[in-house]
Amino acid sequence: MSALADETGPSRLPPLVKLALELGPLGLFFLGNAYAERFGFAGDERIYVGTGLFVAATVAALALHYALVHRLPIMPLVSGVVVVIFGGLTLALRDDLFIKLKPTIVNALFGTVLLAGLWWRKPLLAIVLDSIFDLTEEGWRKLTLRWALFFFVLAALNEIVWRNFSTDFWVQFKVFGTMPLTLVFALAQTPLILRHEAKRSASEPGQA
Image 1 (tube, one colour):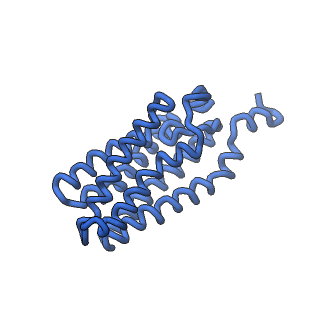
Image 2 (cartoon, rainbow, N blue to C red):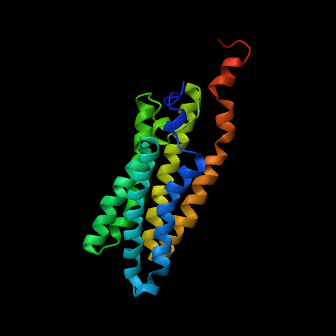
Image 3 (cartoon, one colour):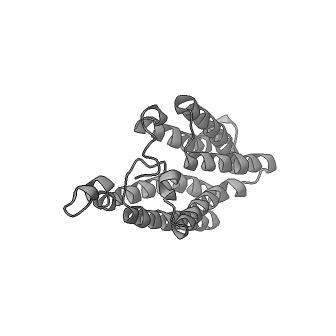
């Protein structure tokens, strides 16, 4: 069974609400950077406006999530903590390096955790992604490996973009590049998920 199979009912947010809470802070980050000039911020100063909104919105989203279901999933929580720390350093030291490193650190961390879980034969993907799937052991193993490698790809892409392109381009890539890539990758895993559903495997001839 899935490691989270017993988390049903009020302990889960509706998908659209969950998506809004996870993407809302990122949207405000983009808007803050894009429209800061209208409030007297120009050039490199715009990233600090976006970062301030990002930090505040992330804290608010986590608080609202907890208020609604009295729990916080691992991935948004860890990502939120890193946002607050590195966003706070960005604002305090007036250095956008910290907020640019945040995606690299978070994605590399999740990739490492998933690979460590494979090594110790633990189904950590269900916990990291707050998954509602109930897969076979083989299914979890394959899906975990794919997500681990994908997280490392995202970390590498972030390093390439922020080191070689402008801050504005990096912000746009973070919003309009990373999110679509993640969505496409997640949808591409549907065949694997369907093949390795625990209920389907149990109902096949010859299965207990």
